[in-house]
Image (cartoon, rainbow, N blue to C red):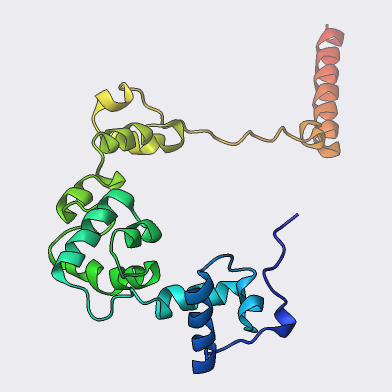
Length: 217
């Protein structure tokens, strides 16, 4: 079960706030305080969502808002707090009176990031860019040795002969495998009819010659 909606979307106004709506919201909060934002729109006579009323008050209407550009002291404070807290803009805004979290976040992305890059500082780690590049995973020590060992695997055995013999143990892994020979067909091993007839004739001639020698006196 999710949270129930804070208002009825069919009966709420959207878009820019009017001057009359701003006056109603300011008058109600001055008289009753902020209270519950879910029930405030109906109590103040506003056809607005409770979230819209809260953001309108915090970012535009509350009297302690600080207008104008950020000072150098605020810039240094935002940089120090971001180095400790990260992107917790609401917590950072609590340390800067009169500034909203949305205002600080936009100012960080549009101005302070560029200022840190111009100083040679990484905006995420708050460390020099040279140190961040040296500590990147692509430049970890021993990675070249691991790649050299993996190149001597059986799948890449041909590349081992271009390196020293110590890398692959001096073993020649280039195995030449020839395809199996096809056995001769049975018909090719049997003598043909002409060859059989010729051999029979030779045998008959030899028998006749031997018989003639026996009959002579």
